[in-house]
Image (cartoon, rainbow, N blue to C red; front, side, top):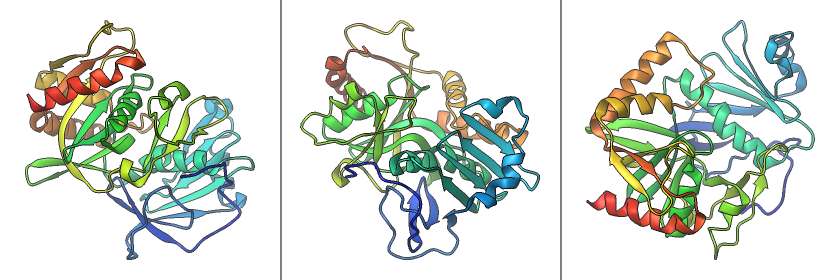
Length: 325
C-alpha cells in the first residue's frame, strides 16, 4: 500500500506492461496494478513528455469559453485529444489511441496523477479503440461480477466498500468495460483502488487503509487495496443494479430492489456511459447497440437503499439474497 504522497514525474523507469479494462498498456510510468510478465508489442504506450510536447495542443484551448475551467479538452487538428486539469497535469491522446503523452505539474501526488490517468484519460483511448465504457463500481460475488451504476454521489463506491467489508473483492471502481464472449458478457478489471469519502472509509474497519486526496478541491480519498481485496481477471457479469438519485424516494429502513423492463434498462445504460465529452454519431450508434445487447442478456434492476452507513451491511445482505433468488 502507498503510505505517503509521492511525486509522479522526474524519474523514468523501464517500460512495464499492464492490462486494464482488457486493454494492454506499455508504460514508462508506474501504474497501480499488477505487471504482466511478458511484454506485448501491440500495447498502448504511456510516456512522460516535456512541456514543449504540449505547446501546439495547449494553443488549441486558448480563447475558448472553457479556458478558465478546471478541466479543459480540445480536439487538435491531427485528431489527438488534449486534456488538462488546471494546476495538476496535462495529457495528449494520439488520434488512434495508441500513445498517451503525460506531464504532471510540481506538487501533484503520484496517487492523484495515476487516478486521472487510468480513469478519465484512459477512457479517451478506450473510445478511440471502439471500446465503450460504463460508469460503475463492480464487485465480485461467487466468481461473478455485480455492477452498481449511477452518477457521482449516488453511492456506488459506498456499496463497493460495504462488499469489501463483507469479504468480497472489488473488480473496478468508476469504469466498467465489458466484452461479449460465448453468449455472455464478461466484466474486465480496473486498478486495485477505490475512491471514498473519509466517513465511508471508516466502514472498512479492521483494515489499515491509507488514503490520498484525489485533488485539492475534494475530500474524496484514493485508497489502494491489498491483493486479496481486488480481482485481476475478467469474470462473467451476473447482474446490474441501477442506483436511484439521492433524495428520490430513498427508503429509510431497508433496501428496495425492483426489476427493470428491457426498454427502461437500455435507457438507464445509455445514461450511465463513461466520458460525456465525446459525442459523435459513431459513438452514439455503438452505445445504443451495446446497451441493447446488455439489457437483453443481463438482469438489470433498480436499487434504492438507506444512506445510513450503519445500514450498509443490511443492504449487502439484501443484494446477495436477490442474487440467489
